[in-house]
Image 1 (cartoon, each protein chain N blue to C red):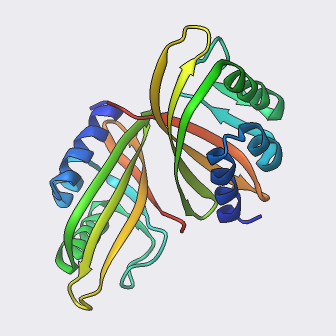
Image 2 (image 1 turned 45 degrees about the horizontal axis):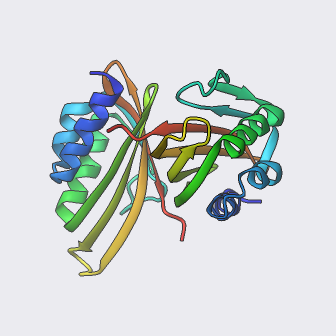
Length: 122
Length: 122
């Protein structure tokens, strides 16, 4: 798949909250994923599908997603950017919060090879 | 300046449509700027303040900006992302259009050292 196809498919799946399906169908085996902050003791830099699936599983198990607005994709060359505005409740703490971040994705051989998340600075 | 300060200052100046002031005050001498498409025969990859000022001058001279909505900044490490939604008229052709793109910026020694623009894929 070309970068724009991968980007549009990822947006489509995230809009349906099918996070794991996005990882399974669009990510490279040796994907690198970079989060700005460590979540629940997970490393900020993850390598490989297993670690990224682990993060996605944690997200699906621990967060109730009330709303997910997905912006983009913005595409050029082998890169694309997607904006995520989510309204979630942490199931354990019952704390509800709105989060806004963007992901910068790099595509190689038709798969997401690198992703990096940047939170909105308020 | 730290990345977040540079990012917020750039957003502030772009909201005021002070494009050249942003370049003059926040950009490194050897900045690299990458556009997805060539505009008016300008190269898609520009090097140094003079070329970037030239592009900004072209923008200010040729475009009437009716509205510029600036989103972000999204910040992590030495990178930030800003979203631009602009409603402009090309003064020569009188063609009015809405454009949406994001810029990915890299900060080095307190200055923008690299910027890259990705248009919204529709």
